[in-house]
Amino acid sequence: MPYKNNAVGLIKKVRKLFTTVNHTEITERFRLAEQALWASETYLNAILRYSPALISVKDLDGNVVLASDHFKLMANIDDAGFVGKNIFDVYPKDVAQSICDIDTATKTKQQTFEVELDLMHKDGSMHTYLMVKFPLRSKENRVFGVCTIGTDISERKLAENALREQQSRLNYMAFHDSLTGLPNRSLFYDRIYHGLARARRSNSKVALMLLDIDRFKIINDSLGHDAGDLMLKAIAMRLNEGVRDMDTVARLGGDEFVVVLEGVHDIEDVIFVANKLLVTLARPMEISGHEITSTVSIGISIFPNDGEVTDELLKHADIAMYKAKEAGKNNCQFYTKGMNATAVNYLLLENDLRRALELNQFTLHYQPQIDLKTGYLMGVEALVRWQHPDRGLVSPAHFIPLAEETGLIVPIGEWVLREACRQQKLWLDAGKKVGKIAVNLSPRQFRQKNFPGKVEAILRETQLAAEYLELEITESCAMEHAGETINQLNQLNQMGMYLAIDDFGTGYSSLAYLQRFPIQKLKIDRSFVNDIHDDMNDAAITKTIIGLAHSMQLRVVAEGVETQNQADWLRQCGCDQAQGFLYAKPMSPIQFESHFHGGRFCFDGTVIPLENYKMGT
Image 1 (cartoon, helix red, strand yellow):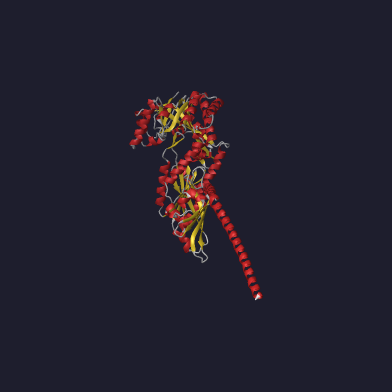
Image 2 (cartoon, rainbow, N blue to C red):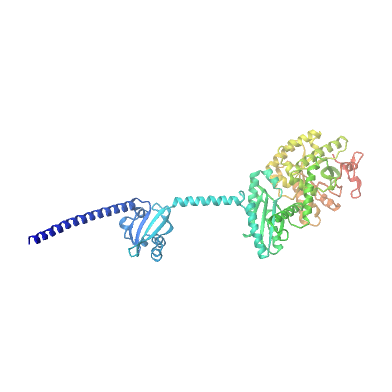
């Protein structure tokens, strides 16, 4: 029995020992577990309190189980009013759905899903958050909630947007004209490439219209580049307004624009658009305090008739555009195959014109100006002629526009002025009094800096007194920059020469400015004289000009008088002087001198009796 008792006692001791050890182990495990739980809660509380992220946990009903302080601060709701609340009661349905997204968490197998959301902070500012959401699953893989972590990506979005805007601006600058905002040459080529491809598929036509502003360089030089830029912008705007949204208006550079019309089936439609643009662009525009009227010359080529590729269409439209300029500007011309030869001829003519001065190919012809009441010779107008060695006498209608366009009109105009003064001095020294000698000034020549000084130098060089010289500028030239015109004319007037406005009635003169011009004469444009018997409007305008001039103490000269009836009508209306084929065609100096007899100028034709021709002083 002692053995048994010892065994029982031993067992009790062992059991007691194990119980003590197990209790100690369990206690230690609990202690460690409590420490781990405390640490986890501490970590979680720290994250929820100090994290700048929007952290929230919702159950499947949308009730908030926990949330970060930043989330509660942003929602302007305290802990008691937020945790336990349903997210759909805190935010509008769409916002709450974006934050919670319970349906997505429960119906898909996605581990995470994202959405960008704009939320308003307590201070009223809008912030963009990237909301990363992931479902909370049990051991059985059952979703029991959704955790959402929102990161403020506002600064990143701003940077991305700024980068996109910068890239967009760079792309825009690469394909658009910086001044007008129109597509530039690069974008034009891209658009017409695709337009031609569409036309091939649909068996339609494409019209390419090349537009060049008439006299733009003169306007740009006289008013300044800033005014020229304003004018280009105004024209670009009018061009855009004159075409369909599907059409392309582009600026190729300088004062050249191009319009691409797609889906053309009838050429009449192209003519309609071209005429519409001509009318729209011819409306006066206000530029830097000046009313300016500008026109364009339009050349048109048609795909596929006039070319299959862009460069060919451009080349042919350019040829047609120069044809429009030759036809008097402010019109449109369609390309024809015969124009190629004309274009080559035009280029050769320009080359010859550049050498004409140095080869002494220019001459002056003189046309008399007659007093309508007395028949006296009151003066002569000097008119330049080009005697080409191969082409013969080249019409001024052909080479003057070319000289204007190329800038050669300035040296040619200076030669004309010097030669006219030289010839007048020769006649005066020989006792042949022809009255004043009139010289036309081109706008570009008149706008030169210190032009009065150049005139003074020529008078001094030729030893001609200023009183024997008359300078003429066109009405449109006078009005392009009226303030500068007044200044130039005042300087010339103070030198003692006669001043006249040529082609009067064809422009848009302001009476207020006209009264300020120190001029002595108005010249009625020949277009009114031609039809004074057949067109009541022309007759009325002519009478008005004569009355206006006389009210301002100005003399009036009618140009282009060809019949006795015209001369009689003008005389009855009080017109002072006339010139035209009725009296004499422009003559060379030798021909002109042949009409001097005994110190008197006589025309030995039969239209006007000889006794009507008397010497004007």
